[in-house]
Length: 211
Image (cartoon, rainbow, N blue to C red; front, side):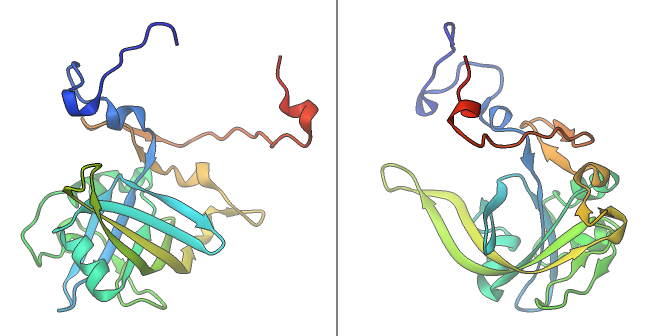
């Protein structure tokens, strides 16, 4: 990269829009459903979300430490990750609205709930796949100077997985058929996975050497 635009985030980026979210993209959307200690349903999308481990399966997402989803996952010790398909895009977007505390976003967005097997929070019935999670760690994030940020990281272990049988082909979950939505920027940019490519890892040093 011979002609790079360099900046230190603390000093500003000098561009029309902050490129951070557009560079770290696409990011899977963690559509997280929770239940409060008083029994109120909450559903919200998180673009700071991903898988951390496969054995055991562990997920993580981060958001405003005062958000209902964060508070619920911390206080009840559970949450559910629901895959956002293209067909659910509008309903996902509707649940991103900052409704007052205690409002059922599922009902407001016309999202049909379905019961989970292990955790008490509901899942999204129309989602291609949902993962029931127990909260492992709750980490309030600080910056390099030790100052608290506004974000809290929730880490959870998957204890149950629901998959719509329509997306299982020859014993394999068909990611492209599910058309998962991904976040690509800070101004309403999204991507849809419709096509996969296959590439295997090098088996030896010869295959791993290029050029």
